[in-house]
Length: 333
Image (cartoon, rainbow, N blue to C red; front, side, top):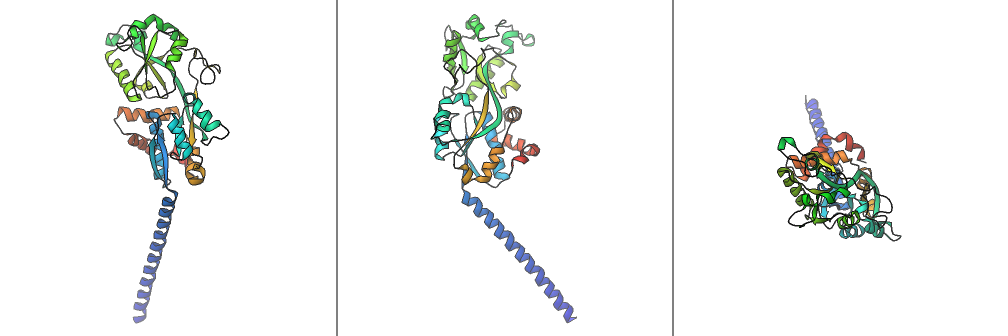
């Protein structure tokens, strides 16, 4: 009986020792993981001034945090601006998802492609950018259900705009038609194109994506004409029935490769850019971000969800991550 009791006590002590050792190993591993996380510091991604970029960055941030245990923060820089490239050169910023090359040709030449340049290309993010000028379909075709007559029934090309200057004129532009632009900080060169096309219109800058789209929405609600700059991918094409005006096809003689503005916009292979120290400082993150891809359709899906359901950028990105593990899992090293 005594022997059995001793054996029972010994067994209990052994089990307790195993538990203590296991807990010790777990605590040590957790401490090491925490130390590794602390040692590598904070990874800074760039937020910019348009929703497609913001949701794409948010998807990358969520996966870096939740799947790779990185500490991640974002810093703001205007889209394709000098502060963006300077920050990537100095290490204030570590990665940006969505550079449109045709909007930053001179900056790319200086900070990325020059012999002493520091900012690193990481390849395409997967998005193909298309830019143009758009009008609501009811401007051309009318809308019988809403009692809207066509205001510019023969409008097909930018060359046709002079036939309808009074249709698009506003108090801001007097006798000239108005081209609604987003922000002068983006290198879209509207005035140069209007001059080259010989169109009697004036570019008016709303100041931001949100401000411009609010004006587009108001025009749609009232059934009024509006000519606006816009791009794809963008949620507006899912919400509004828009018609793109035909422009002369872009060629290498046209800006940004050449000096002519009598042409449309090039197709942009939207690119990832990185701080040159990213690969050494955050090697796993570098591998992940090198693999990171997003299509036009995926970006539009997230932004439309954000807009239609009044979500935050983080909420919309998280919903996409939760629903699409099969897409993003191969990106994780």
